[in-house]
Image (cartoon, rainbow, N blue to C red; front, side):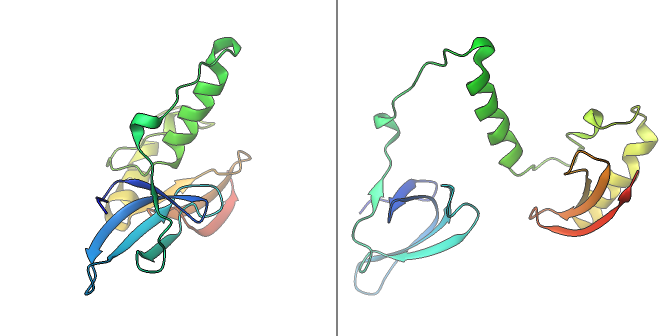
Length: 148
């Protein structure tokens, strides 16, 4: 079985992204993967090819592209926006702060940037109502704050 890190697979009707492949003692493989379909998204799984024999490799060559006939390519924009928002940021720069409900001034961004670099934290308004939350880089909410 030729599965490499980064390969997308389907197991038990769910999609996964392979994060590591190790050879087992009996020439089968141990596959570590992260869920990417709706039911298993963000969860980590370990599959043994000895017991999970219905592993299907998703080949990009078999991908069918579909035209977006909506006005202004709305479906495509929605898909791309959701992909960007679900992707982890690897930058040490603030990425969405300029779209918040305040006039942009650099002194407002400095504390957030320092918190991100030193502690791996970000301050977010996830509700859209001015309630601030502190999140870790793993995207789990670790606290809530008052409104601004």
